[in-house]
Picture (tube, rainbow, N blue to C red):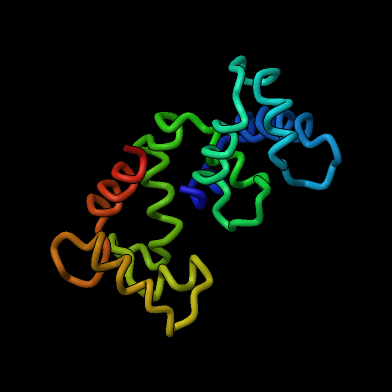
Length: 152
């Protein structure tokens, strides 16, 4: 999802989100801490949040565990899932991985796209979880099923 949010949002979507992010980033350090989210959320999204809600948000959104939300995490969290998971964007995301245009994503293509080394054990687990037909590669329909499961 983070990969899609950072690579497949339109220029207009990015411009709007960047403006909100910069406005909320009061100290200008490029990340949002809990206080900045608590102070700016209602102003920009029209919903009051409690400290507990912000803590839950950070637990779900702070992917790198640094207790701050960076711009990519912010985009992923704020993008409307129905806007992010369109067939057009799913196909574009799939094609970002399918470098050779074969119609499948191989383990090597995933490694290269995500910057993983050849010894990463999690890659095999990921493929096994997504590879519904057991052929060792990910077809477009398998990719779509995985992405849609992530938004449930």
